[in-house]
Picture 1 (cartoon, rainbow, N blue to C red):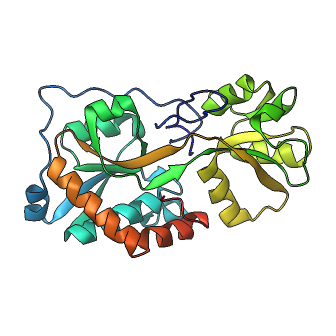
Picture 2: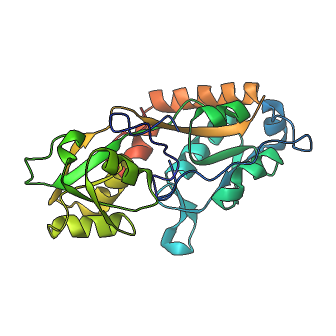
Length: 273
């Protein structure tokens, strides 16, 4: 789920430059040790003909198996595959749980993480990042015919549906809302349509992914946070030459319209800039 990598700044700045997975705060990431592998060089990648990619494989629509057991696919999978093609190498995927993904990078199990890793200061101190390829905000969602709620300030005294372990729960509280506890996005939408809550807050990518398949005309985005969450590819610290090459590839893919094409496929609009 999409909001796990996001951290809250406050009601007027809901998302720090920090994802996500699900509806909880970002898991702790182990720091590098002296036994960890060194930086990955572009030459090493080219000599091997392969760039090894750490990803979850269970994080729809970013990295998942079609039908649960089919081929690995997803937004991030297609992005890094296109980047690898630009580098003249093959993308080879190593699936791992989120809690272990950074340790795997540090140990040299893979060269890059492609899994909607949000950028924040703590991570920037430990890892190198490519240029962002996903830009998202937090969204306030109401019923389509609701004209009373047009901003987060309008939540004062209203009721929202939120997971109690999510950062969106904190934003709803700071906005003065009464919170109805739910297990996730689907339940939030149900309560909203039934009129049992006035609104729900979530990541915009969650909303777009849902609307891409459901086309629910009964709900709408009433407001968005000012702050944006930026997600990028993560590398071992010091992999400067490789990161530069990846950024060049991303620039070319953006100019060619490939990033927008992949984004439209999964979200119905361009979320890459």
